[in-house]
Image (cartoon, rainbow, N blue to C red; front, side, top):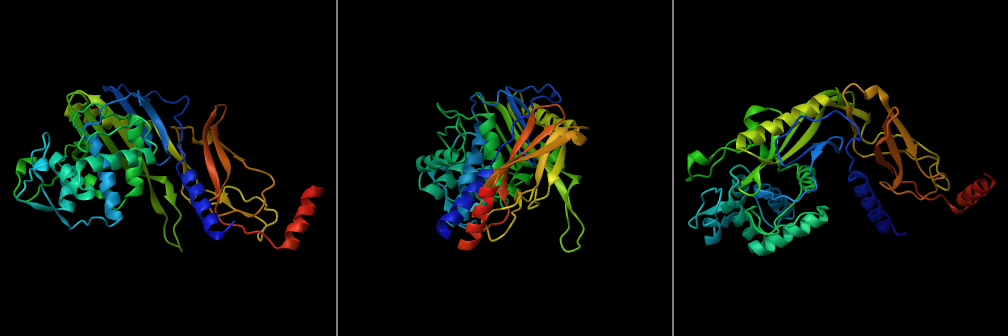
Length: 402
């Protein structure tokens, strides 16, 4: 196998390992009553669902659609197809967009960064269309990019018909798909996520009364830093909120004698079909607070820490470290951390070559007397090349005798 193919295989396997999604606990604390058609609470740090209701039922996403709009725009920025300081024209279509607006008009050429703020803070449909046309040349082509991206992210129950989220036949998603989109948006574009924490913004020359973010939790809870709200008559009042709070037990070791880095635990709540703007905020806050108190995060291993170091046959090294490239955390009912048990499953014998990031085994996590809580992939933290002909022959003999 060529070095190129080996590297490509390693990257693919590493992606598989890091995208593994944990199920909800089979049995756990009962969530509070949530007044919404559908909801989901995800421990992002542990990649684990803590509470759910109707998460696979099709719903209209309203302006939560703009999370995918932003994903495509951020991707275009990273690919240097557009630039934050680049000024985009405002078409008649953008100017006349119904619904929530940034209040830009065709006499303006608006920088991409301001359009992004208009998209996120003011949920402006005019800003959304201006960005779609600037990125893809037309709204229709941009919608194609949105659907292609949804497919690439594994959002199997999502179909987009427009970039702003107005009601249209076939424009649907699910709470589960929205959780995938929200977590990938935060993971893939950390450099742009700060826009979602902006409380107030307006473009020069537009009404000052239109400057407030509709995410009320940004004004109520200092640990909340996103993400998006939405409303249509059909969808009801919707919100995706995320919070991050520090926990001493999740701290990472300091480097070169430095003190430990504080550890944060991030939760994500999705509330769909609430009765009012205030209700969606209250129900979201209720879910977040419950998640932080009803469950505790348990750090099992640090990033790049060996979970196990088994022997390797026919390799230039005799052992290989197996683990994960990110911190291994699980979420368990409060007070049950001492009951966590782990078990490693892997092929035996392990035979070189092994590429860095190659999926080699799994780490099963359970609580005493309960079904498996999580089945986490284990990858080779280092590569192990084949030994020479004599070394491989000698190990071959030893394996045969074994």
